[in-house]
Image (cartoon, rainbow, N blue to C red):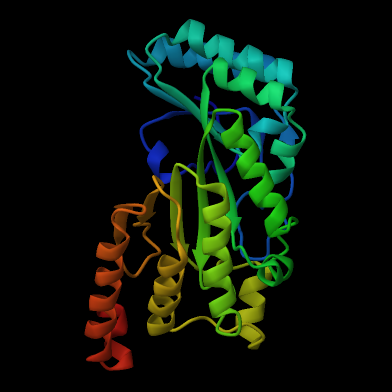
Length: 289
C-alpha cells in the first residue's frame, strides 16, 4: 500500500484496510492536536485511490473492514465517494463495513440524500470528535464549531441511518471548567445518542498551542483525583440509552466499559472504588494506581 505522511485511525480499525482518500485535515488548527501537522490538506487523485484498492485486492486474501483516511474523507465530491464505495463493494464482496472520520463541516456539506446514498453503498459508520460540549472549551481549543452545531451534525448522521461514534477528552477544560466540561459534554452525548461514546484523557503534544500554554502556566492540567471527579460527573449526567461506552484508550487512567444506561451504576461504582484507592495514596504514587 502507498501512504503519504503519518496515518491515523481509530483503535477499533486496527485490523482494517486503510486507504487514504484525502490527505491531512481540512481544519487542522485545534490547539490540542498534533495530527497531520507535517502535511497540507489535499484531495487525493481518484485514480490513485482506486489503484490502491486494486493493489489491496491482489495482496490480501480477505478484507473484512475498510477505513477511509485521512481526517476528512467526506469532503470529497459525492459522486467520487460513490465510485470509491462501488469499487470496494465490487473488489471486496466479503467486506462487512466501511468507515471514516467525519467533521461537522464535512457532514454539513453533505445533503441527507447523499448521506443516505453513502450508507446504502456501504459507508456504515463515521467517527466524529466532539471533544467537549462546553462552548468556552471549544473556543479556547480552536475546534472551529460550537457544541450545538456538532450535536446537530451528529443527529443528522443518525437520522440518515449511519452509525455514529463520538469522542470527547477528559481534562480539556482544565480545573476552571471541570464541572461545565463534564456536564455539558454529557448533555451533548445525550442529545446525539450515538451508537458509540469514547472518552480519552488529555495528552499534551509538543508543537501545539496547548503545549505552550501548559509550559507558560496559562493552562493547568487536571490532577488524577480531578480526572476521576470529572469522569464521575460526566457519568452521572449521561442518559444515552443503548450507547456503548468505552474509556479504555492508552491515555486513560481508569478503564471503563459498558452499555448505557444499563451499566451506568456499575461504572459509577468502579469510579468510586478508584477514588477510594487513590485517596489512600500519596500524590507521587497516583500514577502507579
